[in-house]
Length: 415
Image (cartoon, one colour):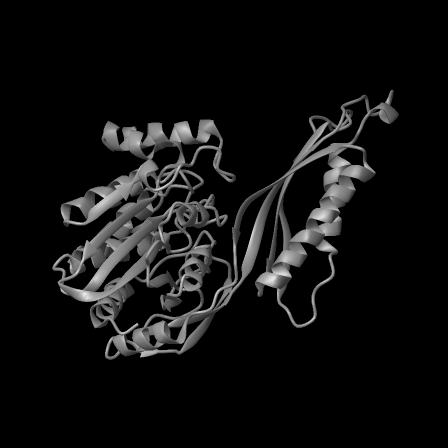
């Protein structure tokens, strides 16, 4: 079996942000081909050209140069450049059965990893080598689990067929939608996603996550008119004030009775100097709700706030949805199959709240709407810090447990 801990440590030391996962995708692609899987990758999976949420060209170019410097062959760097970092692999089993797809997300976050002496990756020499970027949500562990599972299933001792979806850009919920649009879920009967940790301790497995929350992410650009702040303030059109007005009123949106909702402005940049009316401003915000219906209404009201703030200050506004995910529920048949497969591996908690969003929900919904079933499971993992924190770490002892759990479920075929 592939050494999942060693793979995880290598990926942890080389984290890559969404749509720049060139080194990660190259490693996945190479490993899967060597195991006999049929692989499609890069632009074979989807066309990233003009995709909302795609990093700026300079960022994409930098990631390609870094991958080359780190030893990725030029051919693979070219294949995965420009945001084309998805990998899809298929393998047929040795007897009839259903087509099962498993999603593994690959991207890291723009967070600086702690260098505290008690932080295991730092102490043992596999902390992030990319300044300001860190695997702090367990996606390095997810990829390691996926590759170890691919090795375990390469014997073809399972019913039906298996499709592995190695997805870019889960952070910001940007990567699943283009994969769905390009047919990654076509003819899939069962779709399963997993996540490490999220408050579930090591030694526990949850076959069905609850509270998979719908979300939309937006980038807003306000364009006003610069002017001297003292000599001619009336001639300016203040983009900064428009953005500030939008920010305050987004956070003042009313909540919904009987629903869980969240609104957050996470970034605001504006202006050039204290004595200049700001001619440009940019903010990023998100809305979340625990049902797709409330999420849609909350997003509609948020857009009204943004456009009204622009009109109030007489500035132009551009509003771009950079990513989204829907609410999702695990089907009972998937939960039952995972519960059965967990016997003897770990203690089973029937459900555990994720309390966050994941665009695997779009993959799940695509399969469910086509008559299949889907699920989202959590593998317990102790960590000294919560997800998205500089101290997050994965309990590597749970990686082979997760692999065995998924292998048993695939081999059982009881979906």
